[in-house]
Length: 138
Image 1 (spheres, rainbow, N blue to C red):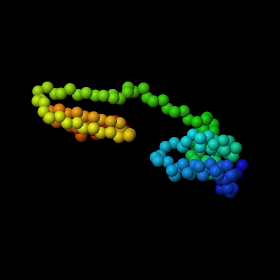
Image 2: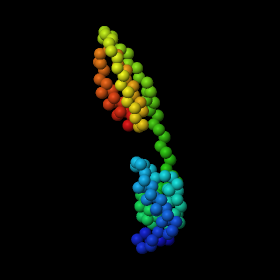
Image 3: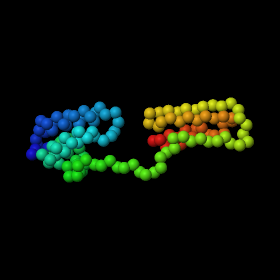
Image 4: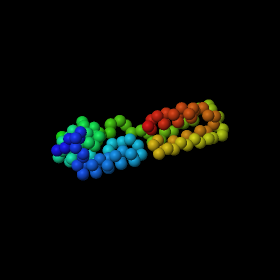
């Protein structure tokens, strides 16, 4: 067993530290550490102690301890809320004459696609619809 304050990391643990550091510096956005890195950290924690490995690898002690004691965390089941509608159609308002039509399309990797087709005078507030769509899809 090594002391994180006194001893350098053993060779395989130092290699894992390098891989974790590389992952931290090259990941495109914040997110959970890959499972293969956790599995290796748990294996070393069982050999060298949870505190020493958490300190040496700069991991959250409680997260590592939980994985050593209980195994990897279970993914939370999605809530049983009803699915979001994929298509919404608003019928024309009675009494409004038809006129020129226009189409507004918004598409993004994270928000999906929104198409608004307006005919007649622009009674609907397209900006409000787009804002509501973007808030819902986040």
